Image (cartoon, rainbow over all chains, first blue to last red; front, side):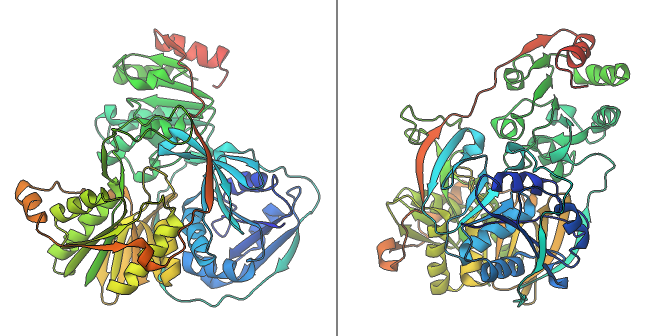
Length: 310
Length: 249
C-alpha cells in the first residue's frame, strides 16, 4: 500500500493546507509527496523536515508553473497509477485536478474528507454540511481531497527525512493555456488559516460600510470574510466568501457581523472554536450557534468594539 | 455552435434537509425539488451565447427517474431548444454520470458543455472534470467569465486568492461558479412553449455502461451540533468574555 500527497503551492511557497493533508495521509500508509512546479527547490526545503514521509518526488517543468489540470492529471495518472491512495488538499487546485485524475483512472473520487475511519472508509459532509456521509470505498485507487480544517498539521522535525527524487516526463496535451491572474492583494492573513476571522453580511448595507469591519479586523490581526449575500450584493470580492459555495474556515475566533446565519453560511464556519454574532435582530439564526451573541445595531457596536480593543 | 447543458434535479436550495431516523439518507419524501442552482447558471450562460449569435443550439440533458423531465422542461422554459432524458432508476455517482455524458457527447457532438461546478446535494464537485478527462477535452472549472473566440474560449476562473484567466481549445467543458451570471425566470408564454419542445428519451441500459457505485454509503448522520451560548448585553461584556472566559483575544 502506497500513499501519495500531491503538494499544493504557488511555486515559491507551500500552500499551508498541504500540511494538514500530509497529516491525514499519515493515517494511511507509506506516504510519498509529489511536487510539480517550474521550480521545486524552495518548496522541497519546506517539506524535507516533515516527519513520517518517505520520498519527495519532483518534476520541474515550465508547463507545471500554473498547475493546469490537464497536464498535472495526465502526469500523475501516468506515473502513480500503482498507488493505493492519492491525496490532494481541497483547495481550488485540488478541486480542479483531483476529479480529472479520477476520471482518467476510472475511479470514484472521495472529495472533502473530514475523517478517515479506516483505510477504506471515509466521512464527508453532504447537503452543505447538514449531513455527514460515511462512505466505504470499493475503488482500486482512492483519490481523496482533504478538508484542511478537519485535520491537524503534520509535524516538522529537525532531520531531513524525505529523499528527493526526480520522476517522470510530461507530455503536454496543450488543451489549455494559462494567460494571467488577478490576485487580491492583502496585508491580512489568509482567510482559511487565520486565527481570527471578521465576517460581514448583507446587514452591512454597502461596500463602504465594510471598512468598519476592516478596521476591526486590522486591530485584531484578523482575516476578512463575508456571507454569500454580501458577495452577491457586490459589497466584497468572491474570495472572501465563507460557506458551502465559498471557503471553509475554522479559526479560534469567528466574528459574524450583520449575518443572519443561513445554513449555507453556517456550513463554512460552524467548526470555529469560538463564534460571536452581532446582529440587531435578536431572532437571527446566527445566535443559535454563537458562543456569545450581541443583539445590537452593528453600526454602533462595531466601532465601539474597535475602539475598546487594545 | 452546439451547447450541451447537463441539469440535475436536487432538493431545493431553501429546504432545510433532515437526516432520516434510520440514518440511511436524508429525508427526500415530500420535499421541494428544483434545478441545481449552478446548473441554472449554466443554462443562462448558454442562452446568453445564443442571444449574442454565438451559439445556434442548446440541448439540456438530465439523467434519472422520469421526474427529471420536469427539470429538463425548466431548462426548455428558460429557452433551451431541446432535451435528452436518460432514463435510469439506480442511484448514480459522478463517475457514472460522466460516463453517460461521455456517451451523449459522442453522439450529439457539442462544441461546448456548460455545467454546474457542483450539485448542492452530494457536493461532489467532480462530474465536469471527470467528463473532460474521459473525452480528453480541456476544462475550465469555476468560471465567472466566459468569452468565445475562434476555436477557443477565454475563461476567468474563481481560484483561492482571486481570478485566473485561461484559454481552452474547443470542444471544452466549462463549470459555472456563482458570479458568472444571474439566471432569468421562465416567463409564462415560454413555459407554455416549452411543453411543445422535443425531449429524446434514452434508456441507460442501452448505453452499456458500468454504472455500479464505487462508494457504499454506510451511514448518513447529523453533524455534531453546536449549542447556543449566551447573549451579552453590551460591547464591554463581550470584550470581557472574549478576554477572560474564551481567552481568544
